[in-house]
Image (cartoon, rainbow, N blue to C red; front, top):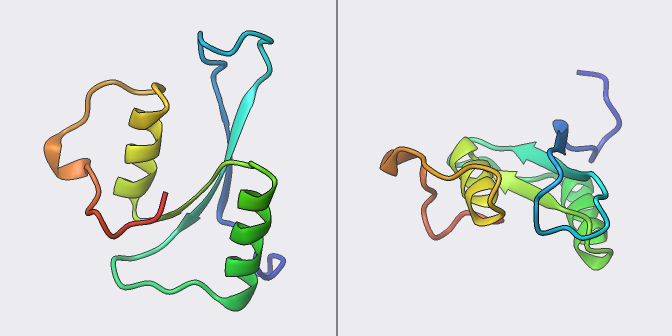
Length: 90
């Protein structure tokens, strides 16, 4: 796709949660993967850097993204089949 190696697929802006006292906007990096998908070395480095700096980053299937959004309170109800397997990374 000619994008920078390691840069995730999606950068999403999320609504400001009610529990955030300063009202700063939230955002999330998303690296979409198939069930058996693997991250490149550059993608793993990007994820590590995000985590070291408390920058939200999710990698895995759409179910992993759904679980993150449920855990963070951005969505409340989802179909049971959209919840991720325990092996997905959030």
